[in-house]
Amino acid sequence: MLKREITMAKKSKIAHWKKKKKFKVREYNRCHLTGRARGYMRKFGISRIKFRELALEGKIPGVTKASW
Image 1 (tube, rainbow, N blue to C red):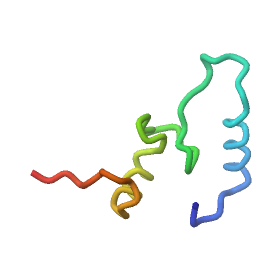
Image 2 (image 1 turned 120 degrees about the vertical axis):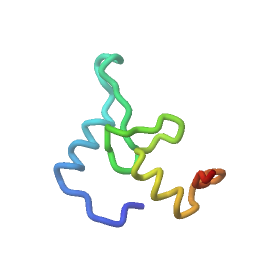
Image 3 (image 1 turned 90 degrees about the vertical axis):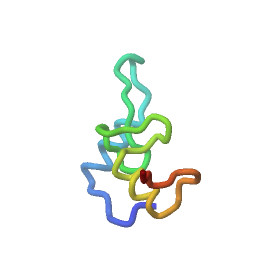
Image 4 (image 1 turned 30 degrees about the vertical axis):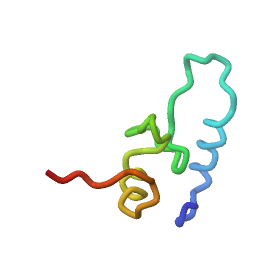
């Protein structure tokens, strides 16, 4: 799904993130597509940047650009 190649460090970070944590308190939300921790949209499970890209491409049903 990702067009660009993921670096080895990024793969390691994602693999580490997917492992079950010893303590539930230490879990935090990450984008399912990029692994980004900041700008996470809980309802969609992705970061704001990926959300914008997918919404503009029309890949998220029911989401339109606001205009008033």
